[in-house]
Image (cartoon, rainbow, N blue to C red; front, side):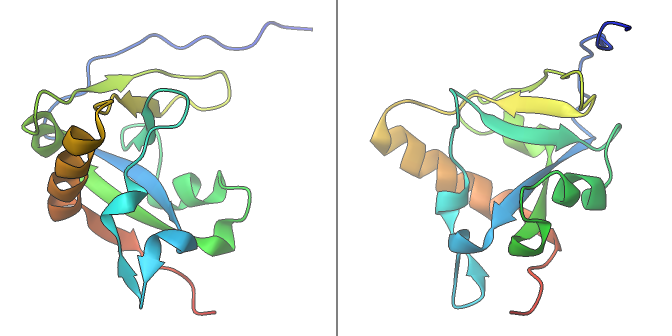
Length: 128
């Protein structure tokens, strides 16, 4: 049996975008909330558009029908309080990338609002 594929880490250009799933719990009265931007296992997981489509990102969810997909331009993310977008490919997802978010609650709330302002919903939630 062959070993899992290992992908090279690449630098993500500022002009590229990343996709992120937004679960239905992060919508209030149909509108996305800034709380969607949160770290899991130390960073916020996103997919680089070079290696993933919006739909592929959605389908990676446990329950795709309960998720929307948002897009963020990498350069806009990097302009927010020293955030960076790093390519961190995984064996089953070459597009996997991460954004390290601040640890302090006050800083995180500020960053969430700024990310919210540059985010764009590219696949809306499916009607209930």
